[in-house]
Amino acid sequence: MPRALILFSLAVAAALPACSGADDYGSARRSMVSRQIIARGVTDQRIISAMGHVPRHLFVPASLRRMAYEDHPLPIGYGQTISQPYIVAYMTEAADLKPTDRVLEIGTGSGYQAAVLAEIADEIYSIEIIKPLADSARAKLAELGYKNIKVKWGDGYEGWPEHAPFDAIIVTAAPAEIPGKLTEQLAEGGRMVVPVGSVFQELYLITRTDRGITKKALLPVRFVPMVRGAGEAEKGEDGP
Image 1 (spheres, rainbow, N blue to C red):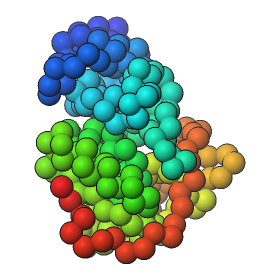
Image 2: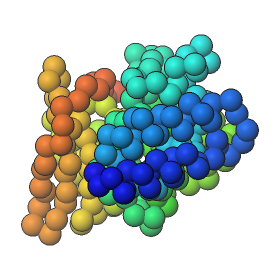
Image 3: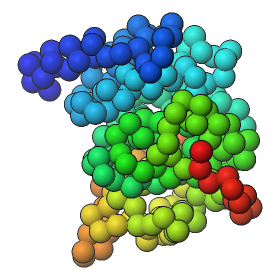
């Protein structure tokens, strides 16, 4: 990254607000952005701003909040994790989001990635297979005032066809193979960022073009497995 851009990005990070309300984690959040996000090459100022604004500590268990801005994933219960901050930023930047985009997230988890996406894109649809996580994420996102996120309890392999096509899809758990129903729900020109594999995983950028699907390997990663088996989403629970 050019030195001038690094200095500019660091200045932006230093000026970031603590969050939408006063909290005791503003300094840790700004340090996370400068040391983990900008220093590793993320340059999209919308992502830098979103990562500096969303209160990550509110998306982890209270007992782990002191570690919320550290450089690693954290457990959120039910065998699931909240991803490392850099990976959240990297995947968001790889999706190349536009302000008008409709985005599908597979794997709501605690809701943190959805909140970051909601700061950047127009409409976010998020699916979580573990009902208690879907319920708690929906409540947390509503509490924080996010009105452009809909959360559904269901099977991420099926996507959300009622709201397709999507301009971007971000998958936060690793299927053994790229789910065909998700690629079908991409709009032309749409991008999907998805980790694929079991023991060894690779993060891929999938793009739907007028000639079909292209696939680009981005970097090796380690995500929890993507599982299926949830029942139908409950009526009335598909949005805050």
